[in-house]
Length: 251
Picture 1 (cartoon, rainbow, N blue to C red):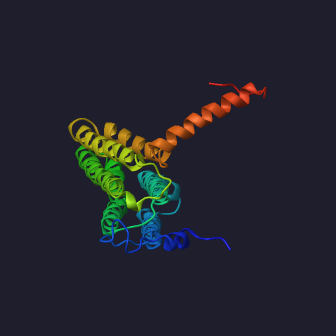
Picture 2 (cartoon, rainbow, N blue to C red; picture 1 turned 90 degrees about the vertical axis):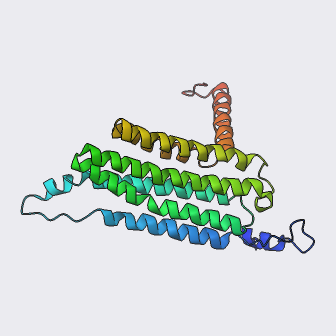
Picture 3 (tube, rainbow, N blue to C red; picture 1 turned 180 degrees about the vertical axis):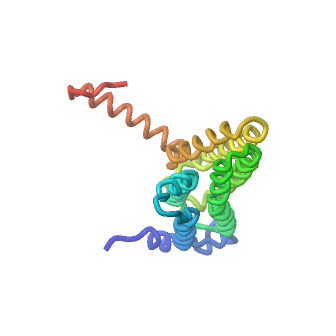
């Protein structure tokens, strides 16, 4: 019978002679289950923002197309929630134990993640209204909440950086310290987006809003892992091309 991750960790839980006996540790299974539940409920509730339109005979297509901003908001929120889940899964695959500080940091992260659909719906409604001032308020609100979520990730990465006993043995000591740069990038760029949207044009802010989830989706396994994967991919394609396979070109 195969040994699960939790069973392995239970056998390896620190004993009284541990170098950190004052720290109360727990396994990650309950935290991961709770987090998955919160994110799945958040995704499920997104569809509530799409309202069934009232229409007269022959006007259904017109009323459906009039709600285009709601559809975009739903897709954007769904994709962002999916990116959050990918990053959360990748982080806690590298975490061995939890302590109180990590639980609190994770709750902060879940709070900000669950809020993301709200400013997205506000932004779509403001865009649909055509009022530029409302759009500026909406992009500022979105930037504030999304930036807070990146700040929550920064707290999670910081906790794992200063508490190495929480991390799996195979994870390099510089992995989570480097991940703080990813979180800082979001904090700074969302702040820039909010200022640009308020002082200049909301369209500039929205370009940043679209780019950052793509960045976090691509780098969900971490900056180090993403770079290694890209380097391995290039090396593999070169070797494959040199072996004489047709239609393959080395970079």
